[in-house]
Image (tube, rainbow, N blue to C red; front, side, top):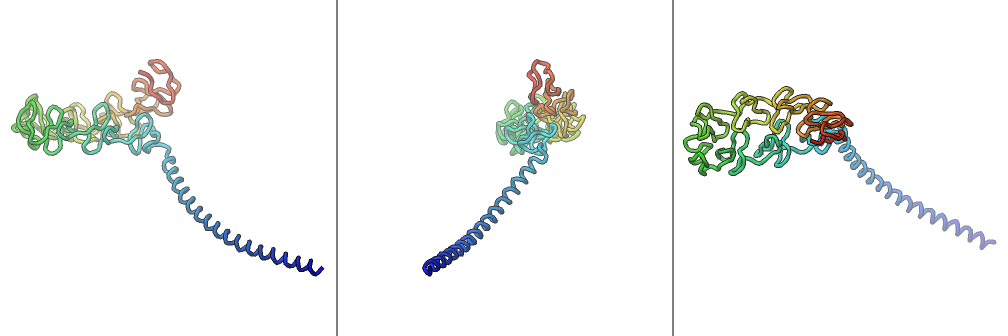
Length: 293
């Protein structure tokens, strides 16, 4: 009997000892887990906050940022192309609103694409401009010190010798070769600024200006001449027949560049039609895709 009692006491003592060890170990692990949870919580909080903030920032407006859908044909960053906001202004990219491109690039007319300009052999930049004192001859830049093709003379600070610069006589074919110069009554005069005559190729000296009736004028606003690349600067405006007008709704002009319409509508020969409507050249307007033709 005594042996049984001692056995029971030893068992209880052993169990209590294990329990203490277990408790101690468990407490240690528990503390470790809490620390791990704290770390996890911190990471989760930081990651979640970052993701949430990004999602909230990008998705809060749901449109208008690069890579997102356009907001009624307009973007807060980039430009609207095919219903999506895309980067603009760089080499090979669409011209930004108002026809703007990064330095050293110009908006390629109706194509609405930014192309490198200004260096020898490149197209002239807007308003006849060439880099490094070069000359604009026949729409292409000639480097300083080189012979001006077709007009003769050596290019120096925009002048082809005896002609082409401001105040000089016009070169052959009534052309001027210096930046910001155009031929008027046989003399090269200033061009490209607001209110001044347009430069060669109907260009002006800034992205917010466009040639209208031979004179450079502010462009892109409602009722104003479209800027380079058929672009407009105001939200909800598109280029129709060279003038910026309200765009995007059924019966209105398509928003440019990109020829987009609002609410799943489609661009049909320059005008928007509602989703599900018949296209003029056959087929049905679907998912905002331009109609054939």
